[in-house]
Amino acid sequence: MLRRGRFLIRIINYFTNVYYGDYLPIVSISLTSDLLKKIDAFMRERSYSSRSEAIRDAIRDLLSEFELSRFETGRVTATITVISGHDRHDVDERLMRLRHEHDEIVSSNMHIHLGKTYCLEVFITEGEAEKVLGFISRIRAMRGIQQVKYTIIPLVAEKS
Ligand code: NI
Image: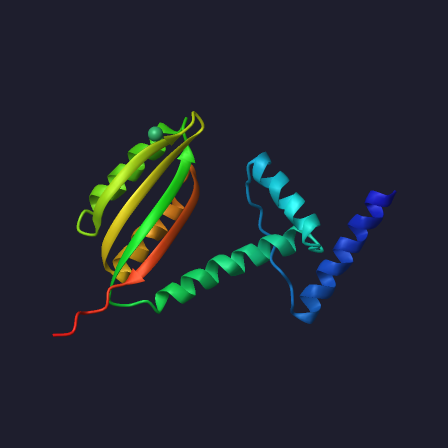
């Protein structure tokens, strides 16, 4: 009975939102159960009103990070740390293919095993900000990657 009531409220909300123009499109995303557990715990801890609100906030954060980095121009150097699951050998392979595609900006890379669970890859890059950020975006978008963190340092032209 309670479920049916909730369902009815959702339908009413849906039409009210459509009518007033602030309709939020519903998308379905697939998450690992581990990630879902973490998001739910995070949501409760930070008092988000819903899972959706927490996920919207995370998306805003991700987008603003890229907005900010778009203002970065000129030559930069970036150190990129990538964590992936040790059992995902396909990730290693795709990462190396990507590395070769970006040979002109990747100065060095290192592959380390963190116990038996994770692989850690570090890339040292140098080049035009746009290209370096493009490389980072490609890594982030790759399936099987667990975490990507980077630091960018602008290379100021030496005074003559
Ligand atoms: Ni490995």
